[in-house]
Every structure is written in structure tokens, then in C-alpha cells.
Length: 466
Image (cartoon, rainbow, N blue to C red; front, side, top):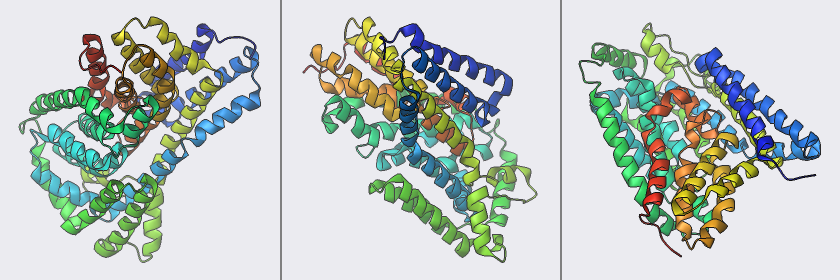
């Protein structure tokens, strides 16, 4: 490297990326994530690469190596995505998802569906510590129920995501809940106690907002006349039995027991195939193995004659997740190039120049996490990089490590799902079938948490000294 990184230089790839993403949204709309955004990330990554080679005199091989290592960090997420695609297809074929939707429609009040969905996901995510597992199991069923009741899917997705990230942010079983205090040098349970200060008010406000929004979809506004027809079609096409709840409960139990996500999802996928043989043999061809493998790869296709029910259950399969996998790979390529050139570090470090007190320090930390989610495209990187950068700043000001760890979670964990090309946003958009920018306005918990953290910082409330 022949000179220090200039801020203007570091911002060039970011400006190019933002410009291309805005152009893609205007031209392609929701389909921008099916190719255009991936190309934008790839092109912007090469812009960073060219700048690194020409201005910073970094070897292309070195840049490529860091970018590939960055992509390697996303392989677990991509494998989980592919398995979740198979799981969704087989859980529909086996009747697991139809059973959850069938009973859920009859139990959950339409008026209070949104807050109920959020609270259900809160309990599940706290128990498992995983937003991804919660969304990939309970979340799928709640999307189907909300769709049947005529509630806009972006609202349902917002409720599912809000509840899912409550536990991901707070549960001692969560990897981010353990990662944040590790990077800050804080005790895990001290970290959780201080997290409650911003997390509980955020989720309470979110539930209140979901209640207000949900009341606007009273029975007079919900398409209730088709609900009975939907229930009849589901009952005709699938064998509905409470025994099918064993599959999601078994997966959640594995996650609760800290079995890694990949084998947990694999067990759930295999169980879906077994349950298809046991409960839905009428949906299988003469070659049952061939049918199950086809559904696992290409998804389930229902032809009941009811277009609504067919659209509800014709989904899943590994192939349905390929555009999301592609998005994550190109996003990690862009983030890797930015990091290898020192551009991420320069932009984040620049924020330290604006720190004048505790409030501005927390604001800078939260903002850095959000920025890193936008550029590095991974919530773990946002927590790790920001944690390394700001740890000494908190120590110099005599602030306890829990203040930093709380800020990392408030800014890093919950905002990853709001970025379409981040692994979190790509995952939830893929499994829920709702574009990230469509559900973003309704992710009340995820939007409120960073603001709550900054407000607490500037007010000087619950700021622990060393």
C-alpha cells in the first residue's frame, strides 16, 4: 500500500453500488433481486478492486484471496438456505405446513393476528435463540395463515421478523448474543441484563403498533368468505392430523439443545420426507422416492383447482433459493473487496472523528454496524469489525463493556434483515416470499431498537461506568 486511504476514494464503490441499486429498483421493481442486484454488487466489487490495484498498489491476487475468504464465510448460510428450500417443499408435501395453517386459521383471531404472530415468534426465538429457525418453521405457517385471512404479507412478514429477532438478540442460546459481549469484553449475562433496557421497550412498542395496524383489518375488511373454502380445499388435498406437529417441534427441540442449524434443518427435511410417505401417500407417484427428491429439489406444485390455495402451497425446493444464494455470494464478494482495500475500515473510522460524548459514541457505534450491514453484507462482520474499532474508545471514556456490546446488538443484529443483499435480508425474503423493501416498514422492532439505543445513550440512562 503506497498511501493512506482517502475517504473520497473509499466512498466511490459505495456510491456506485447505491446508484445501481436505485436504478435496478426503478427499472425492475421487486424482481431486482433476481439478477440485477447481484450484478450491481459484483460490478461494484470490481470497482473497489480496480481502485485497490491502481491507487493502493495492492496485488490483485491478495484482493481476490480476501474476497474468496469472505465468500467462504457465507457458505454455511447458503447451505442452510438450500436445506430450508427443501424443507419447505417437503413440509408442504408431507402436510406439515398445511396442518399448521389449517389449525392456525381457526385458532388465531384475525383482529389480533399481527401482534399474536409477533408474540409467538418471540417465544419460539427466545427458546431456540435463532431467528432463522423461527422464520423457517413457525414463520412459514404464519405467512400462510395471514395470506388466507387477507392480511397484507409485508405486514405479516414484519411481525414474524420482529418476533424472531427479539429472541435472536436476547436469548443466551443465540450466537450473536454470545458474539457481541465476546467482542466487547463483557460478561454474557451482564450483557443480556443491559440489553433488556433497550430490547423490552422496543418489543412492547412494536406489539402495540402491530395491534393498532391489525385492528384496521377487522373481519369486515378481511376476506372471510373464502376462509371456509380454503379450509375445505386443504382438508380435501391433505391428510390433516396433529401428529404432523412433531416435525416442527422436533426441529425446534434440536435448535434448543444447541444442535447446529445445518444438521437440525437436515433432520427436519428427512422427517418431512418420511411423513410424506406415512401421511400423504395419495400425493406420491408410483415411484415415491422420485417424487420426494423432485419436491426437495424443485418444490411442491399443487393443482387443486383453487388458484388461491394452489399459490399458497406451490413453492419450496432448493431451486427456489438459488437467486438468494447468488445474492449472498456477490454481496460477500463486494464486502470482501471493500475490506481488503481498507475502505470499510476507513469509512467506519471516520465516524470516530464525530465522537464528542457518550451519546455520539453510541450513535457512531450503531451507525457503523448499520453501515457494515449495508456494505459487508453480514451481521457477524458488522459486530466483529465495529467491536474491534470501538472497544478502545469505550474504555478510554471509562464506559463498561456492556455499553458497547448492547450497541453492537442494537445496531448490528437487528438491521441485517433490513438489507436486501445482506445474508439476513436475503434469507427472510427467500423463505417468506416477501421482498425485503416491502416488509421493511413493518419490521417495527428492528427499526425501533437502534433508535432506542441512541436515545438511551444521549439521555445518559443506564450507562454503566467501568
